[in-house]
Length: 389
Ligand SMILES: [Zn+2]
Ligand SMILES: [Zn+2]
Image (cartoon, rainbow, N blue to C red; front, top):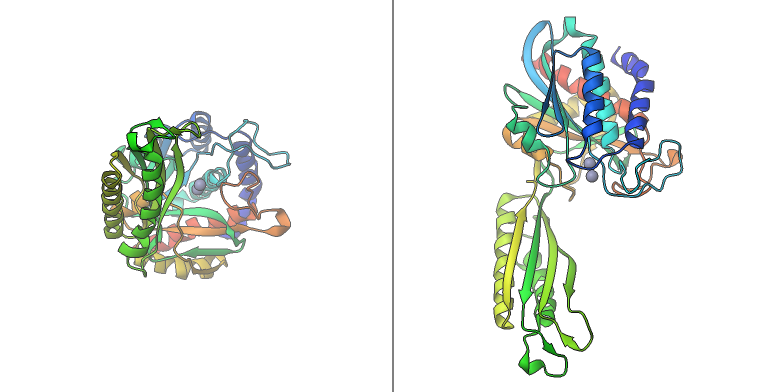
C-alpha cells in the first residue's frame, strides 16, 4: 500500500526535485528554496510550519492516535560548482549546482509529508519535519535548528542521503561511527624576508613550511592507532612572490578527518606541537587557526538494527553494512542528542548517467532512488511507532 501511494507521488517528487535543481541556492542563502518548501507545506495542511535557524523550516504533523515523536530531516543547500550536465533540468544559476542531491532530499521529505498527511487518522504520535539549510558549510544549519527547538520532545530522528557510489535499489548504514569528523586548520609561518642570495640575513618561511608539511605526515602514521582511520591533508601551501626573494611568510591550510573524539584531540595537539616546534627550529614565528567542524556521525546501534529489519522487509531494498566513509555530515549533531540513524540510499545507475561522485560538475542521481528514500523514511517511522505501542 505504501508503495502504491508513493508511486502516485513520484511524478510530483520528480517535478519538485527538478525545479529545485534548476534553481539551486548556496548554504545559508536558501531563501527561495525555503519559501518554496514552506508554501507547499502550508498548502498540504501540516499542523504547524515555523521558520527557524535562518532558512530552516520545522513542520509538524500530529496523528490522531497517541504515540511518540519521530523527526525526519532533509537538507536543502547547493554547492558553488558550475553545472556541466546537458539536460533540461540543469542549473540555471551560473556557478551554483545541486551536486550533492539535497534537492532530491527536499523533494523526498515533501512526498513523505504528503503521505503522512493523507494518513492522519491512523497516524500514531507526531511526525516532525526538519528542512535544514546549510549542510555543506561549517558550522552548518543543524545547530541553528536544534537551538530553535527542532528536537524538543523528539524521541528519534532519521535521515537519508542519496548516494551514487552505491547502486540504485540498495541501502546501507552502520552502527556507531559511520562518517568522519571534519576540522580545518590554517597555519602561518612568519620568517624574515630578504635577498635570495643572502639567506644568512633572512629567516626563510618557505623552508620552514616545507619542513612542516613533511612533519605533519607523521601525525597519522606515528600518533594514531593504525586500526583507527584518520586523515591529515595539507591542501594548500603558499609562500613567496619571486625566485630571488626569500619569503617573509608561508601559509598552510589543511583538513583533518577521523572517527573518534579522542583521536581528534590527539591529532589537533600533534599538529599544534609540530607547527610550534618546527617554527621554532627554523627560527620562524607561527600562528595557528584551528577550526573545529562537524563531529563524527555515529548511528545508534538499536536504530541501525531497525534499519536492517525494515529496509529489506518493508522496502525491498537490498541493505547492507556501510563502510566508514570520510565525508562529514552535520546530521551528526542530532545524533549526539537523541537516538537515530542516518542511511545511505543507492542512487548510482550507469544507464541513467548517474555515475559521478558527489560534488562533481556532472553529478546526477537515478531519480527512482527518491522513491526508495521516501519509502525507507516512512517505514522507519512506522516501525518505530509500532514498537512503542
Ligand atoms: Zn555534499
Ligand atoms: Zn550532502
